[in-house]
Image 1 (cartoon, rainbow, N blue to C red):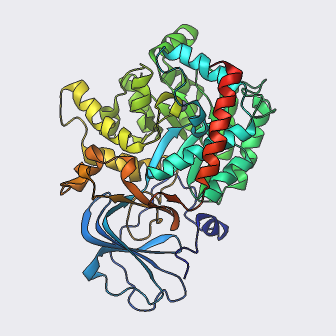
Image 2 (image 1 turned 135 degrees about the horizontal axis):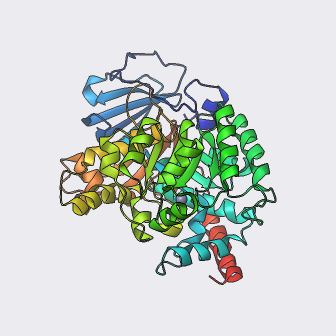
Image 3 (image 1 turned 45 degrees about the vertical axis):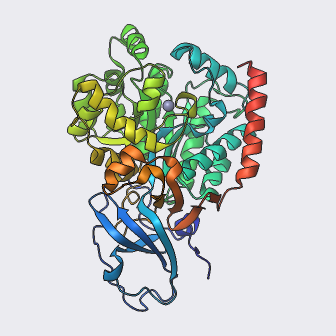
Length: 479
Ligand SMILES: [Zn+2]
């Protein structure tokens, strides 16, 4: 029997009702009603691991069953009874199961710019990035995206919110690979394409293109489409207002950068007399569903306004520090009950897509900055990187290992030196584990990765194409 017969694509074609919802979904039952034969027509996968950790609990000697892409049983091995006769049992001794991670903000195809101008400050870095991207072709973007998916899958990320030059072909590349994406089509001005090599459409035409993509994937469950106005400082006021109006009409969410740097604040104060987030509020952005990346330079009242409006705030600590932009008020966001995700931002400002790094940094950074070891707890950060982040970017049924949730699961190797001892699993995951410990990945029950092998992507081919693209682009741009 095949270990997996129901991928995300198959689930989406069946039009399941859990798709693309921004709100809360509850599926908290913890035991399975199944005994013998209940699922006799549906292959059941049974995972037996040393332990399992999810939002509210840890289970030792854990067993998790899934079928049709959803979790159908979770508990201690001896308490679940015998699995159905048609089950495929996977013995994961030396492994612990946890929810797959959600990356709240990235630009995946920028993997090709890993290491571009790492040490010369924000504005020179931005100039280099833009010089590089003027020469991008569609094949380059696809290679960069696929390279990013190799890295994300291998380090336990199952869903990501992304802003770049998305089109149908690239979204299909993600669908076939099996990951979940909330994809924002980036725009800056109505009159010109920001990246002529990638798309000949003007910014105005990109909005119609975005709406078509959103309509096409409306019932996907795997792919969500956002408008992607880049930032308050890079998008003209009238154009931003037009995008907000379209979002109000269509319900298509907006993904943008807000208050990333002190330079942005200075620029917006000079231009508008307002801080970036206040300017966005004045334009009406917070009246539509919005994902705001970075938010480093927020005033306390702006935080309160964004929380009240249920804006998703994406914390990107490595990128914020590497670019010298500062430290976001992450503890205040959490205390205010904000919808929060954890993001890597692009590889050009990170330089990896490993969310385990972000989890550790998001915990220790704020403790150190405030000289308070209780400023952020490991439980809070774990929840933001899993269930909270997944919900924040639109995948409300990912991020928890509970009955009824999507089978978005990763397994960590806990036999390594860094895992001795690992009695406190939460502590191990946040402070000692890394993406290199991930050894299995399932999304909607589809097996994407197993012990270093990619099951949906041709890693050797992608690595060759991505390296060739990066080399050519560096030569052309003189970076
Ligand atoms: Zn960004």
